[in-house]
Image 1 (cartoon, one colour):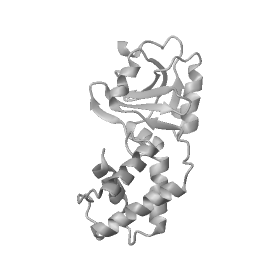
Image 2 (cartoon, rainbow, N blue to C red; image 1 turned 30 degrees about the vertical axis):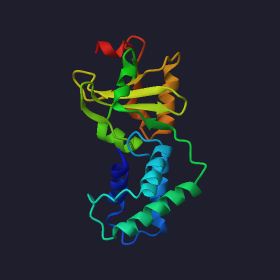
Image 3 (cartoon, rainbow, N blue to C red; image 1 turned 90 degrees about the horizontal axis):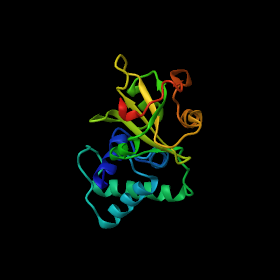
Length: 205
């Protein structure tokens, strides 16, 4: 995702607003800092916007907006200014890693079964899974602690449940599960830790 992707995402989320007033600016700045787009960090988003504005990069026209380019550029400048005013930015509990980080899970171990759908998890963590890959549908997350967790499906032959795996050496897998639950809105009732007898290298499945 680049300037075009970031700006399109912003405009898509405000296209039905009657006016791009300060309340809209506040909402978008807050969203960029608390739920970054794709695999971007907060700083990535900020730098893409500031660099694009400074360079006079054209406003993409994919999203139909009643405002002209000059008005939209001014709107984006106000978002950047609001992001600056919100420093220091909140520390995020996790962020989504790129799809090629799947290699980190080569020798990962399943630690829990999550009995729900991918769509439900996406809504509860406000992040999208990678779909249609050679590894199925999955999402890799780097947690605030530094541990790297992944949720994958399919894993069990008879179910679309997700398997939670850790790419970090975990003497106590329960700590990884607890961090995920405390950092997200995933329902604890849907998460069942796997016993020692269930644990096996992820690549063997």
